[in-house]
Image (cartoon, rainbow, N blue to C red; front, side):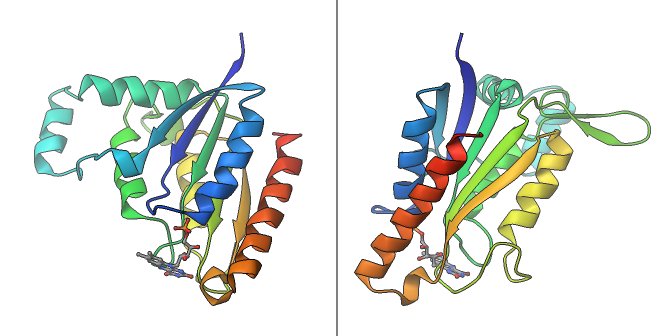
Length: 192
Ligand SMILES: Cc1cc2nc3c(=O)[nH]c(=O)nc-3n(C[C@H](O)[C@H](O)[C@H](O)COP(=O)(O)O)c2cc1C
């Protein structure tokens, strides 16, 4: 049986450059993994509010969210594609992750601390940024969050494929950047 890869597509814009990179990488990975994809541009997850928290404390979480969180927990690999928005990623992704961050499914806790329940040993985050901001820059608040959530959920090593300064590049430069990121992504696929 093929190993499983869960792919969160948080590319929100038609013609997304992030998605161009992710499509090529996912196509390559689909040769070796069974891909389960959730496209956040086509779905709408609720903001976790008081009503949802009350339902959760009464032991109720919608069946389809439980099923999806279980798929994430059981996946051998996780890929997230998301453009760089407001120095982080689109809120649709944060809302999705909040809905998937479920006690006893993606993480658990003992009397001392939380610990992860997810199986994926490797995570890949693909992004493009408008400004000339590199991965790990203090202005870049997407990677630190994904790393922190990976710790909570028990996910393994994070790799990042990015292109930057997109909004200050010519069409040709953008194409070159996307192609360079695809090439880097395909190289990474060999050990992902
Ligand atoms: C709502 C919105 C917010 C953005 N915020 C930022 C930002 O804070 N910093 C930045 O460098 N670029 C920002 N950008 C530019 C995008 O990161 C850039 O255009 C990126 O390549 C878009 O990816 P896409 O082609 O996959 O949609 C923003 C773009 C949008 C639409």
